Length: 637
Image 1: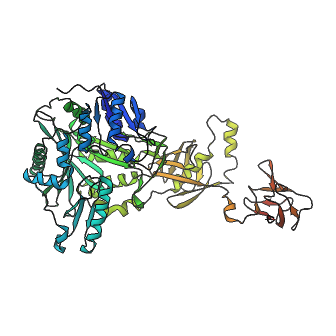
Image 2: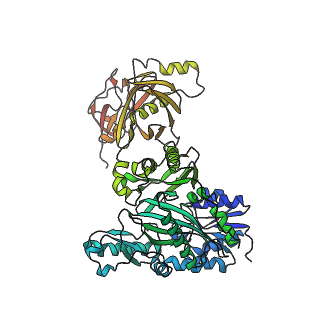
Image 3: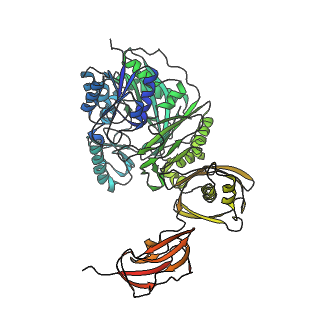
């Protein structure tokens, strides 16, 4: 009999490691993390009872080193290994090594992993099991009638090694590129071709099996909204499927699991054509990123069930009945408008309100680095109906405060509220058709800039009444000016404390501004971090990241060396005696005295040489950046 698990090592990082640790703690298990050097202070490390360093940064040197992971488990006293997803989760050799080391493997038998590891071999197995398949196409004999084609890596997933070919002239180059990418990502350059189904749906079935012959089909999920063949929004159950189709998908998934004597959690993925015909794509022999939507609908903890099955426990004959609908959105640090460019840097704030589940591997102040997937969080809403779940998820994301990095948050909100999505008209070409419209508009930033300027001018909490009144003195006749840039545009704000064209200022604090525009009252949350120049403004009008333009932009960027510029607006109160054009000067010699803000500032010669121009005179008022004098440096001997 399999021994009971007491300490669990998760051979992964980020949100999936944090999520597995959460269940392990609930079950009373000790937890062990592994981490690369960039992840030394990551949330999954902080969440574990113990952590073991995997020296290095690249995945190939750390999380993909099965020997180091097993050594870490043994050293830390773990008696079981959960692979999460990605990295070593579908590596049959690693699964065997875990078992050979006397550790419990939280996953399917290595033989099942091996059988499904190659998509081409898996298709042969599924054909024998009666699971419907797309007929393969031999690239060497492909004709125009076979187009479009989808090239896919035989090993691995996640969109790597995948290409759509619509022109036979580009087939050879696409094959080479797909094979090279597959070899780099998975160590296997095998690529195959099959018909590319236009406007097909990506539908999958969650399965769970024990060692006693029970196999559950835990409903369907729709994962059709994808970018670069990677899922962005998933939901359960897949909407709009006829009962007969749903049942046939369940039967095919169970047949696939039984064909390889499967145990544990897995996913069988299908392509459903526009006319409702399903075709087997692949089987993922691990937990999926989108498993929370199934958990929500069935009221289950799939990780807890994985652990039970690994300990030899039996599942009930039938799963619980599903209730309601769940939708998940993947929040990425990326810029969809710039070809999905990943973003790196400090995540100052991650606050997602509402009755939603948030699985994340980051906390405020954490750094998103260059080495790993840029997913910040998975956000899941569950409600009695699809419409309610979609609405709740969109509302939570729209109201989130995410500061420090560009994310796909606006794209997710726009997708969830798009008429096609709300009508459940789903297919994998959604972003090909709508990406431009979903990323081409930005919410009005002018009012956000006004809120930022007002918050910046607000007195500090606890300031005296005199200071508060003094801070606003004469603003009605002398408006203040601030400038900000956002999304490539610059906004200049001239503001009074109470009166603005079409806008009433109802209240102003350092972090909260209430404005009324066109009779509509809105609250603006304003935040500026001490270690960041950006100002973050969140409101019902949208989220804005504003970069203040210096009141007095550094004119040194626009002048030649030797130019002496006024460092601020002020009055020239003194010129060095006898100073005139042609005078010799020495480095550090005071040339002018400028009074500003009740302080006197000396303007010094930047180098030894000759004063070639003098534009200032005693009593002269100068603006910031005004050219005061020019010193030509003497040549070096």
